[in-house]
Image 1 (tube, rainbow, N blue to C red):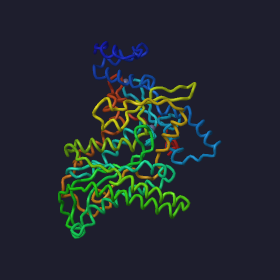
Image 2: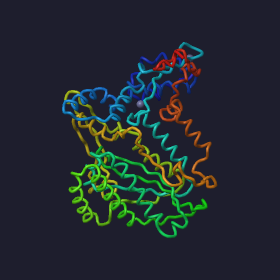
Image 3: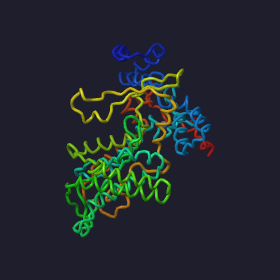
Image 4: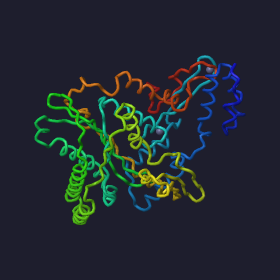
Length: 445
Ligand SMILES: [Zn+2]
Ligand SMILES: [Zn+2]
C-alpha cells in the first residue's frame, strides 16, 4: 500500500474529495498506479482550467458564420472543414474506442482525434509527425537555417490571392537554383542541394506575415552522387535575387489573372526596389552546433507553426461571455533583437471582439492539399540521388521509436505522465472491439 498522498495532492487546487475512493484503490497497488491516477485526474478537462480554442469556436462559430453569410462574405471550404473537425474532436457521438479492464469492472472510453492541424490538442502529435519526417530525410551533416520574409507592402496581396503562397515557395527555390546551381562549374558537376522549406503565414500577433523558413544541408551532391561540403552562401546576392524573382512573379501572376491590379502593382514594385536596396530580408544564421539535437530542435520549432492555430492557448487570458471579447498577450518579435530592456516594447496585451479574433485565426488555415512543408533536391522524394552511403541523421530504429512514442497512449505518457489504460487495480485495460463504435457502420462488417 502506497501512502505518500499528501505531497502530490496539497500542491494542486483540485478538490480531491470526489476522487478519494478511487485514489485509495489505486494506492493499494503501489506508487506507480497511484501517481498515474493522480495525473489522470489532474489532466481531466474540468481541471485544466484554461480557455481553449475549441470552447471559443464551439460557442461563437455558428454566430460568426451567420454574420459572414449576412454580409455576403465567403468562407473557404477548408476552413469550414477544419473548424468543424476541431469542434468535434474526441466527440463521442462521432465514434469511440472502448477499453475494458480484465480484472475489475473499470473501463476507458476515448473519442477519435480529429487530426486537424487547426486543433491544438491534435497539433502536438501532428507536429511530432512532421518533425519525424524532416528528421528522416536529413543527412547527418551541418545544416543552416534561412528565413525569407517579404516587404510588408506585399502582405495584402497574399491575403487576397492565396495562389501567391505557391509563388513564394517557387521564388525561394529559384533563388537557390540561381545562387547555387547556375555557375559554370556547378552546372558541370550537376550540383544538387538538399533542403526543406516551411511556409509560415503568421507572426506572433496573429498578424499576416508570410515568410519561409529553409533548413538546408551545407553540402551538395555531384553527378556521381559524391557529397561535397559547401558553406559559402552568398547572402547579399540571395536577398536581391529573391526580391527580383518574387516581384517579377507576382507581377506576371497579376498580369495574367487580375489585369486591373497590374499597373498599381508595377508602381509598387518600382517603389520597393528603391526602398529595399539590399533586397528582401533573408538571413541565414549558422546553427550553433550542427548536432542532431540542434537540427531536431530547429525542425520542431519550425514545425510548430505548421501544425497549430496561430496562437498558443496558454496566451489566452480571458474570454468575456457578456461583451464577447477575448484577451491575450504576446511578446513582440522585435524585442528578440533588442538587448537593452529599456528599448524593448515589452509584452503586448490585446482585448478584442471574439469575432475579429476568429477571423484572424481562420485566415491561416491552408487549403486542402496545400503543402506547408516542401522538400527539395536530394531531400525530395523524387530525387534520383543515392544518399544511402551517407549517414542519415537518425537510424531507422530511432525513427521507429519516435513513431511509437507518438502513438496516442505513449503520447499521453510522455507529455502528461499518465497511461489512460493503466487501471487503478493495477491491470492494463484491453481494447474491446464489440463495445467500440465506429461511425460509418464499421461494426456491422
Ligand atoms: Zn481494473
Ligand atoms: Zn483534434
